[in-house]
Image 1: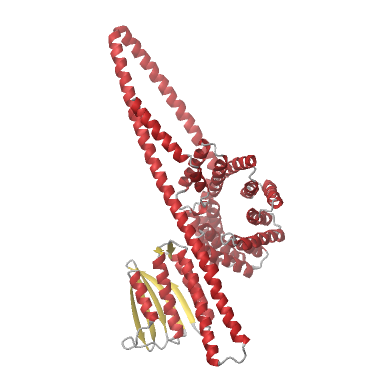
Image 2: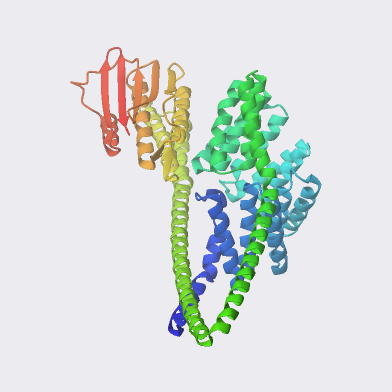
Length: 589
């Protein structure tokens, strides 16, 4: 028994040593909450355990950071009381440690979290955080404070002030190259333009924000932008244009458990169908809205009931234990009266049984603890690996965009300067310079597409659809005499996920097919159709150009590249051409 207890003590000590590592605590506290693709309960458990680990070694900064992360998680779940309490705990420790940047940020964050419940106190806390950040010239903190202060001004219907602070935030984000924060500024400015009834400008800024967020896979931001674009159409009374945007936002907010946005989407859909006199749909979405709203506001009641149940069950078990003890005492006295020797034997057996029971329970507890620690280590290792991989992808894509992209742009500018700077340049040389400039521009577009694919481990059909639509829109602008059509069959599952290699190759094949139709076929009609048959995607690119003889023509790099890309993703490609036009069919899983 002593040997067992000694071994158990050594294991516990080694486990505590692992959990008390400050670097590990900091790495968990720095996780991006919105990007964690694990269940909400697991996220809460992760930061609660991190809080306990920091408390064990009296690591106060780690404790404060864990409280602040819990405050953010509870806010997304609609648990406002817990969110406020956690945030206040974090602020009190930051003040003790004189962490001025975090004091400013979390005072402002506390104010922002209260915006719809207590605007007066929200403004008070926001101004307190703003004053600290401005006094200490904390630009990194101020970019978010100015943005959120603008939101409070907008809620208070001070639209000019809101736009002023959104612009101040945007200027700092541009200076710091905050590519993730800039879309939030565009969205907020778009919202003010919408309230000022400048709908075209509002839609322009929302679309800029959406494209950036699609590139960075910011799912919550994407959902908000879809809803906001829907609101612009609602303000213009274009009800049928607003409906699909709300339906794009809703599954994302449901999946991420973003309760506030979910109930808002339901409310907006109910209002739209009411305007369209579709009473069945209006009633259905209003019921969904009421259910989500009630669930958010009944959380405190549910927690109180749970606490009472625990208290009741505890008292019940204590009464049962007391009753059992009384019965054992009576039996013990009876045994004593009958036979002292028998009592001694029974007592010894009871002690041995109890020791065996304790040993068994301790062994079970140790095994369970080791299993949970192993699962937690594996989960943390996976999360940290994903974060490092994402950071590498972001760094590489930024380098490509900032360095190679800038160099290609410089080449185009230099060629244009040569063309217009020398009046005696020959026509042949001018045409060659134009060809080089066009090739460099195309290289920039392909570089952007590569960056888009690089930033994604997976590409959803919805992402691919948006990318294809964007390419076709560019093609329309480049060839005003050509009519384009992009259709997706209703049976296509928009939630389907491709690997980044599959998604990129499909996109490149469509791009190559459309470019060939424009450059060589002299087509004035080009159609791109996507359907699904027997669990396979059928992608047709059809034109009405002059066509070519597939038996005699020598396959160029473009056609060969399309076939190679199809093979790489396990697909097949068929090409049919005549004087009436060309059809390119890609079939892939």
